[in-house]
Length: 121
Length: 209
Image (tube, rainbow over all chains, first blue to last red):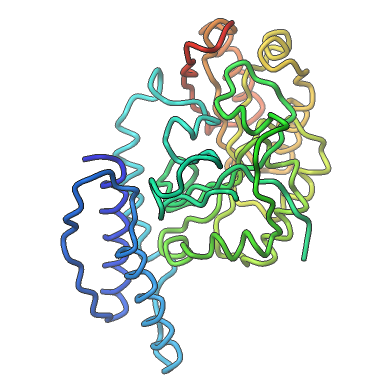
């Protein structure tokens, strides 16, 4: 699985936990996208906005909502799995976020990975 | 309105690499060092095309992932470039985002003390790349002196911040040896730091030692 797909799955798990914890119905269909995955997409972003709206509705109705720290275990699992990798020899330098494909140069095509990156204008 | 700063990029949905939870990395333009293997040279070249943000504009931009930040204990990691040079901007950003987001700084610590004094009350954790404690090797690799780094490390330790500081000690091909790295780690432990990790810089073929 590519890193983008892994990120997508983890974010999806977080959204599902938030929905479950707050009694929000969230139907998550399996992603059929075959190409390069940026970790998120318009469909994923729509789910986030839907969740935010539902949480706001519940808050305005006086219901208690639960968000803070409730999905920490999801990313903690990622931390544990990353700790199993050897540190020495295969860890990019801290200033090397380009090698992780995480920052686009301002002149790169914003269409390539439209939703994961905010490109300086 | 607030102070306006040049930012070379913003990366969302980073997992674990820049602190706990889901984080957004904000990379500033400008650095005090000129490292031989710097892999973000666009952070120091004067002709880099940057977008300028006020704290309010940055807050509105990264707020899109607030749900993930809150749910996972994540937040924003400031890197670059050297983020400590933007202490005033970061202080204004903290005032906007409130106390719940985890704010992390990725720094070389080679900055004047007043920046750290401004950041200390508002930053949750630091990731410090010390490069090398041996001043001759440090100067050779970065073109700068490292006394400021050492003084700042001591100062952070005096403030009781050893636990919140993660120190990265790199093996720098062509510059330091395993023995040099061991010596740096030994000093850091003596000064009270225990959250220390070693790694090796990956160099590109275009870098000439």
